[in-house]
Length: 530
Image (tube, rainbow, N blue to C red; front, side):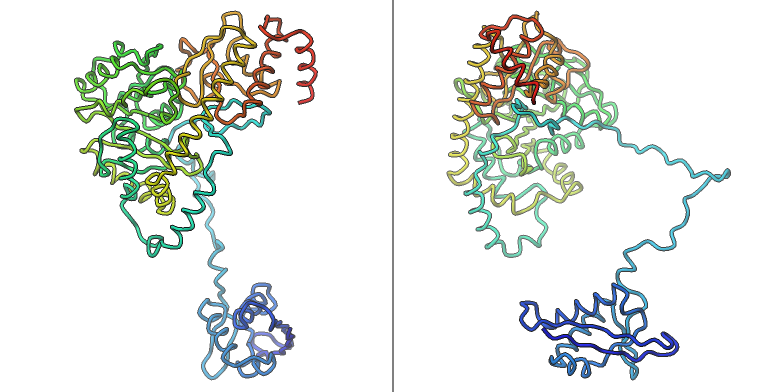
């Protein structure tokens, strides 16, 4: 390491009578270049105030001799310091520390006091125009056994494959990181999605109709921005997904709830007047898990055609079907271009990717492109490129088959555990998805009360409101429906969690099938330590 000291001459005008030693350290063994080291050292002295504005610096030849480095090294460091605003030169005089440093422009100076009214008080700001509520998509609880809804298995992400594809795309990216692209998304990804939807969901579409979005939530926002104005009537299921209802509400839509039964939305209760939009989850109704029957699908499409409405088909977890063949998606049955299909990779791969897609009727392609351009100019290229390779190859199909079997086994384990401890339970949503809904017996506490009781025993089970559903301040299911997600829990965790729920119920004097009094006492004692 070379340690040099320089004592600058000071002008009487700037620093009368002041003499200052300036330590500059240069490490010849460092991987950092000598030029960069010199730049950093001088800049540091300036920022720490050891070299004050107006202080002269040594001539390049003098400093190079003192430090034992080439004059060119000092010259290049000085040029960079001048280019970035730390130094300035005066012809035939020398080099000096600038009076106005770059960092000074980052701090606010001379801010005016807030505007005040005639009485000297700060003028009141007008309320912001936006009004909205955030859905309960993030679970704030940390429970030992958490049946949170819609959470993929934490170990299911295809890390090795994703890393390999990611590395390949980074190496071959070329100019793709520096270019703007089609706001609708990477064409190759849209082609891969269109190819996947044909055999998987019976949807015949083109890549031009596919819009890549940041998960289903942005897809809902894109559709809402296209179709909703203040007072626009929007039909939703009752109960429905909280995130959808709250998006429509934030655009000042007039929500029109239509109840659901075991065959899905009750089509004969749809409004007869003018309606612009309807939102449905036909494959696995959220939150009840019902599947919309084929007869009702056809009637729903006929209704939309007659009243001039679009339908958003949210197919959020349709990749997981366990019983029989899935019904053709509503979009696959649509011959009039009424349906906007909404899909996501948050459930099948991982929510952290923030990747989903819309399939829009042809007349909405250009308006959707404009909306996406205004929102964010499209999704990041790298994520799309990796996903394209993942879908187009055999990796996605293999991944789906593996986790579909895993989730089926966990669903079966949950059903068996509920039957073991509670007898003949009434369940819905068993045919597919990542959660089922337990219809509580009439002698049980209300759903929200049972949720609190289970939480006291370290178990997360969820009423409709607690599970990110919206039931319009009370539906036929509100007090007696518990949502149980099973995809993120092991079978051992599922069994232990259900047993603790049984203990919680037994503790309030309700007879529970399959739990002995001794087991109840043991688990009450264990739960007290959670």
